[in-house]
Length: 148
Ligand code: HEC
Image 1 (spheres, protein in one colour):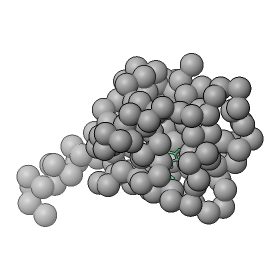
Image 2 (cartoon, helix red, strand yellow):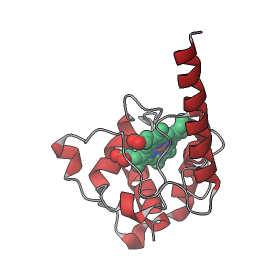
Image 3 (cartoon, protein in one colour):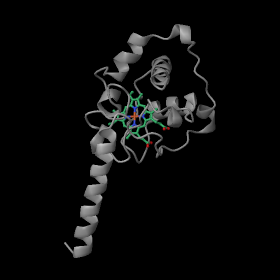
Image 4 (cartoon, helix red, strand yellow):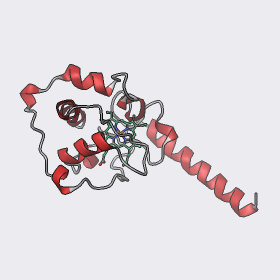
């Protein structure tokens, strides 16, 4: 390995460490940059059809903490939704911190729906095509209350 590459690798490693220590702090990355592309317009404009009174916390939590059919959202996004799940440090870009209002307020319902169903190419956010519309909208409500 050339000196320049060794230096780059060392700098890269210390940058990663700096990031990890920020994520460990009481207030993880917030606001944070989003690598996820914009959803197509017909998704972007969708509003959550599930009224707040029809929110089923148990259904949403079952998906967030693992329905057994895909990796639990919490493994990456963290049990508290702060983006610091057990697997989080494996990924670049890191999983979204849903508790960060400054970031999440700019992510419309339709964008959240689209990214949960289809995933985010170029990031490790996986698709969840087995989830019905209703179940995804329940998770959207769950994520929203985390940013309050
Ligand atoms: C394998 C790890 C992993 C799992 C499992 C995972 N995510 Fe993600 N998620 C990510 C990463 C990485 C990103 C990309 C962050 C970015 O765009 O900067 C992301 C981004 C997101 C975003 C942000 C979209 C945007 O436009 O900003 C939402 C919403 C989201 N995930 C919801 C979920 C939900 C709900 C689940 C479970 C049903 C889930 N994720 C499961 C890793 C994961």
